[in-house]
Amino acid sequence: MKMLRFVEKQPRRGTLLEAMQYASDMSNLRLDFHGSLAPLNQTQKFAELSEPARFDGTLRDYQRKGFSWLSFMERLGLGACLADDMGLGKTIQTLALMCELKEQERLSPTLLVCPTSVLGNWQREAEKFAPGLRVELHHGDRIKDVALFEKNLQNLDVLLTSYALITR
View (spheres, rainbow, N blue to C red):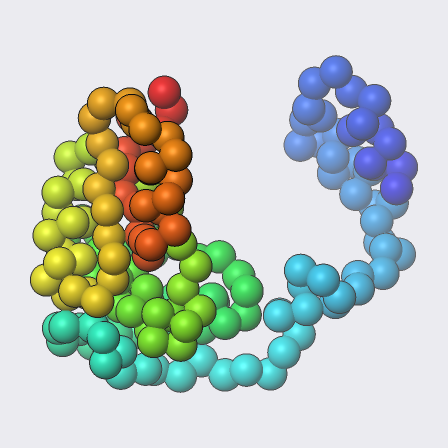
């Protein structure tokens, strides 16, 4: 706890060397697997899934593994990041996950933020591979009728927008 007190008192972040010097103070810190760490203590096993019924396409083997991994992480309540190269199907893997969640009635309204250059691709891929998802593209002018916009959000599964718009 000495390290935490040190960091809290600093007007700036400490250096790595300073953090390491105080890290020895944490050796008798007891980790408790309640709360956010609890999923890591579960015995769920990773299993490769088949495409959800609502998904209108066929995933390649590596995409199926990626989708299955995303689903596994979601079931554990953990975040995930697909870091595949461009063009390998991150969009459809994500859409497959959304379809699975919708089938299970576990899909919460999702805000999907991406570069402006790929907004159209996301919308086309959603129409093609996930026609059962209610997807809306919001880009361009500011919202003129906020109440109507908020009402429409209630009926959406996915709201697509750009980094540029979200930072305005």
